[in-house]
Amino acid sequence: MIASTRRTVLSLYMRVFRIARTWQAQSGVPGDTETERKYILQEARTLFRQNQQLTDQDSIKKCLEECEARLEIGLHYRNPYPRAVSRKHMLEKTKDIFAIVC
Image (cartoon, rainbow, N blue to C red; front, side):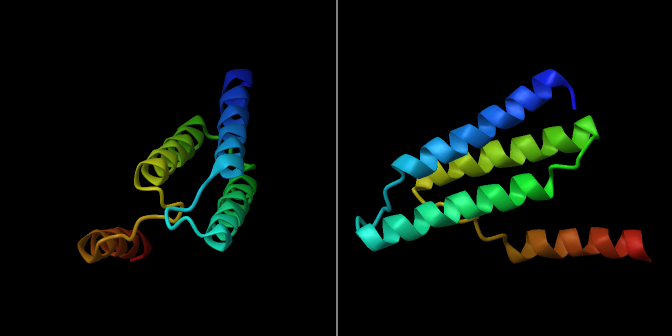
């Protein structure tokens, strides 16, 4: 991994942790806040570790863009969970996968 890419990844990782530390659930219920904070931390750890072995710059860039998009959407809607994917979008993705396999 290039040093600048490594710095970008670590910066984004730390940004996620800072957001989790100050996160407040939209409901205002302390239990919800704690649950959502734990979810943010666990999701970040899981996804960053899952992609830790990536070496292809395009794949790394795609993952960084996805992470930044999820952060911005989560902050905007005050919802840490991934947005539901429309059925149409899911069907298009499935067609792409089947085209590759077949």
